[in-house]
Image (cartoon, rainbow, N blue to C red):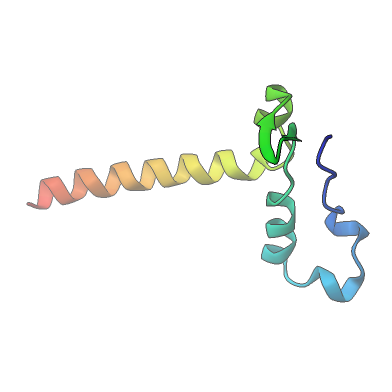
Length: 80
């Protein structure tokens, strides 16, 4: 049994759309490539999991977080 996707943000009524961060949160809650087996979530399609539509948002976010964390660590070490 494959878990159905949440409706796309554009498929929601106008009042349910809300601000951009809310639409992004709906996009992030889409479980892709998983199935339920004996009540447990089991990965079925790794490519779908790794290359879902949220990757366009998560990858730059994590890259920026890594650069900022590294930079602040270097600055803090230099200041110490």
